[in-house]
Each structure stands twice: as C-alpha cells, then as structure tokens.
Amino acid sequence: MDAVMNAFVKVDEREAHLVVRVPLFALRHAGFPVSGRDIDVAGSGPAIERALAMLRQDIMLWENDDLLVPSSAVGRLQLPSDRSFDKYKDALADAVGTPAPGTVIYVDQGFLDADLSYPISSPHSRFSIRTVVFPDVAGFLKLAVRYLPPGEQGRAMVITSRSGRVPLNPAWYQAAAGFVGLGITHILGGADHLLFLLCLIIPFVRLRQVIPIITAFTVAHSFTLIGSAYDLAPSGAWFPPFVETAIAASIVYMALENIVGVDLRRRWILTGLFGLVHGFGFSYGLKEELQFAGRHLLVALFSFNVGIEIGQVLVLAAILPVLALVRRHVLTGRVGIIIASALVAHTGWHWMIARADVLWKTEWPRFDAQALAVLGRWVAGILLVFGAVRLAARRTSAFFSRRLAG
Image (cartoon, rainbow, N blue to C red; front, side, top):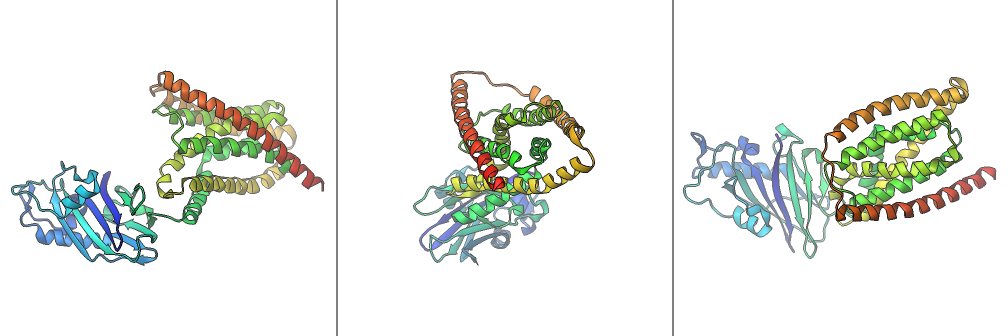
C-alpha cells in the first residue's frame, strides 16, 4: 500500500509547470481499456483525458491565496522501468511525448506522466500545493515534490493527502508559526520526555528551584537538536535505539536519585547531560518536518525549540500546583517523593528493558578514524555547552532570587 508519485513544480516568468508521474493503480477510476493482462495503449486516449481531468482536481496548486487553474494538460502512459523523472527536462520531454509502437504495459503496473501548465502573476509569489489523489488509500500514497524556483536552488519534500495545503516556498513567519506549533505538539505528545520532566521536579515545590534545572535541560537539548539537523549526529541503525534506551535510562536514574535523596543542588549537571540525549530524541520528530522549512532552516530550528519550551512551561504550570497540593495534603515529606519517584522508575524501567532488547539486536558500528573524529567533535561541543549551561543556570537562578526577594 506504500507508493509514491513523483513531481516537479517549475516556476517560470509567467507560467508554472506541474510535471507529475502517477501510478496507474491510483487512476483506475479513469477506466483504462484492457486487453487480457495488458492495457490497450493505442486506445487509451479518452482514458488519459479522464485521468488528466482527475489530476486537475486532485492536485491543487495555489499562488498566494488564489487557486490556480491549468491552462493546458497533456499526458502519456509510461513503463515502470522508465527513469526519465530523475531530471526535470527529461520528465517534461517524456510527459509530452508518445509511447513507442508496441509498448506493453501490464494492468496497474505502469505510470501516467502528465504536464499541467498554470498561468501565474509573478514567479516571486508564494506557492503551495495539496494532493488528494486516490483518497481510498489516504496517507499511503505519497507525493514527492521537487520545487524549482527561478534563480534558486531546488528543494524537495514528501507529502500525502493528510498533509493538507503545504507551502512550497514559505515565508519566514509561516515557517516559524508552523514549527512553534510542531514543537508544542511534540513535547505534549512525548510521554518519555514528559515523564523525565516530572521526575526532575518531583523533589521541588518552588519555581525558583526548578528554573535553573529547566534552563540546563533547554540549552543541552537545543545543542544536540541543532547538531542533528545539520547531519552532525552519529549515523547508523544502532543510534536511534541507543538514544531511546538512554532516554528511558535517564528517567530511571533520576527517579532513583529522588528516592536516595542525593544533593539536588547539583541536579542541573545531570539534567544537562541527559538533555543532550533528549535533544537527539527531539530531532527524530523534527527531521522529517524540516523539508517544510524552505530556506528558513535556522528559523525552523529556533521556532521548534521555542515550541518545546512553551510546551514545557504549560506542563510545569499544570503539574507544579498539583504536585504541591499532593505533597502538602496527601503524601507529605520524603514519603511523597519516594512513592511518586518509585512509580516513575517502574514505568521507565519497563521502557528501558524493551528498548534495550531492540538495541541488543542491532549491529553496532566499528570505531574507525571517522567515528573517532565525530566523537571528538561532540565531546568538545559538550564541554562548551556545559560551560554555557552553568553560566545560564547561575544567572537565571540569581535573577529569580532577586525578583522573588523583591
């Protein structure tokens, strides 16, 4: 059920072209004539026209807020072995050509290559796209779009009918708004991140005690998140399960630390260490979405971090008053900390065991010169981050202490 439509959106001075290759199974409602197991290529003219009419309606292109209407549409049937869609010029030439005599295409195994032309007002407008092709398999049929604006480097993205209307060249404020919302959604939907956040604040009841710890977590996860976005993170099948296992282990460790009752004034150090790991976890939720940032990668990364912090503030605003009431009236003193932390540790332990089992079955990398170079860069970066975290935590704590004292 997993299939891909390939497309180019090429913007010229007064015209935009959507050149798209669609699997024939997604156009079966066009009623291509069949002879035995083969499509009657020579007699498919009317079916191609019906398929083009479907594509006019099911793949929508906007200029700013105006829905564009194709001025022309042409198409042809193509064999599944054809590779002309690697480049735009080849794809365009293929879409407006004709099949070679004697071409045999099996039912549901070929493609329709189409070129739809749209008159536009300006090549510098904001363009967006949406697909609803073959709604019977909504979400499974992907549209891989390569956007080719004039005078700029092309960009690629993959969308489905569930993506809605997607900007091809978003403005910075569009990218910012989208990624702030994505950050909020990610943190509120991440059970392991929320459980870690709960574990951090269980021993504390005052906001000024929590602020330096959350600051350390924020700075640390921002560092690894940005590094991952620029492909500086370790690669290989082993790394994602390693990160997920380490996140679960961080929950267990913090919960045990709460139970044992170690010096909480140094908690920001461990929080920063674990924040680095959680940053890699955040990056997995972000990596597939960066395609929608357009030229605004740094804006998207900053906005995603802002969204995460807004989500954390919302969580803290909800949890701290409840936690204070529970510790004051239900589970008082150290007993409350121990019981709450034990429940968190129990959940984190099960997650850690399940994820470690996946990690154990994954092939580990060889530590060659390249791997050691990557490790060296990250160690140096981590030392810099800890210096920044320590400075930020101290200044933030001093600031809130003065404000609360005043």
